[in-house]
Length: 383
Image (cartoon, rainbow, N blue to C red; front, side, top):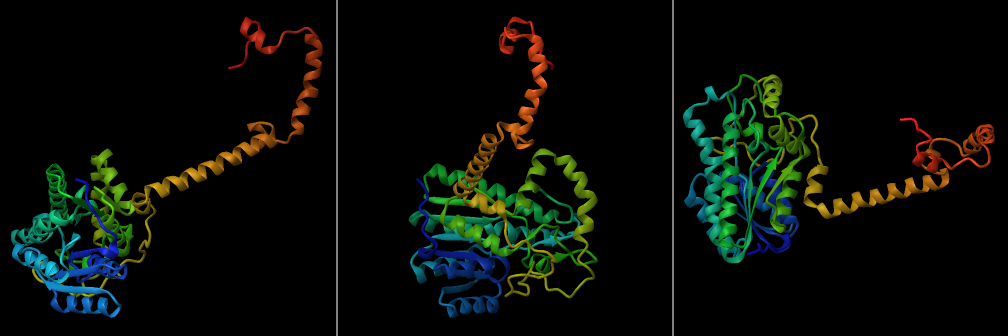
């Protein structure tokens, strides 16, 4: 059965990790477009402020305190959404955290906790949402990463969780499609984002971490999420840099290893001296902000992502430019007497005619046309 997705202003949208970064930006953007939003995260105070701000702007929002590692907590979030609004139309599994440092320096308990949030949080959220989405139809949107496709040094544990999210999402999609469930399952794969990723990460290094460029605005991810909430998509890279990253893994994995081994550790360690921090691995971090503001240059748009979200418009624009280019070439051909007329003045044709007159007189009036002589083999054209 084809997924039944509604316009955003008719939807009830549940968003985990909604107290900061991508989740907070997405909740605010969805509310401005008329959606009823359910915000879930661990930070009670930040959630309450976010929901209050949305309502102050005329939106409709409730908040639920929940740790995504707890399946019962996420089932309670789903129940709260249905009690308040009667249904769930889209569920966004966004909550996540990172460990930045070498794998050999990562404590097993920290490694397990990372999987509890990043992987099991997606599993728990999906299982809480599916019964409701199966009944009414809707979108399940999981936030992966470009690191779902390509691991990088000093973020190995995080890369592993995102690879797991990709495997889970792809398998779940196939199973739901085979069952005929009216659910669209999408994996969003952002590049580096100016969220609170580095601020909330457990940092095992002796310097501040810094994500490698290009870095994109969280609003681009929010737009991608809401696009997939109303139009089914299998997956979507956010940022052209993410797509290039994935292509490097596909077509030149060993060369990419070599380049990353020699460049990325230096880039990731370029964040400056250590600062006081409150990482969000085992408890909530310093929430309530959309951006960290630690990157010098942040890309506010992505032409690649826009093209993927609107392929027909992109195709029409490209076709329009093609028509204009073709018309310009044709116009130049007519005015210039052929393709060469674009590059030289018309009088050169007459000039050639004057130079050819002596040869024509030598050949004689009854000489064969060039094409006939060529066919008979009496004229050889230069190669």
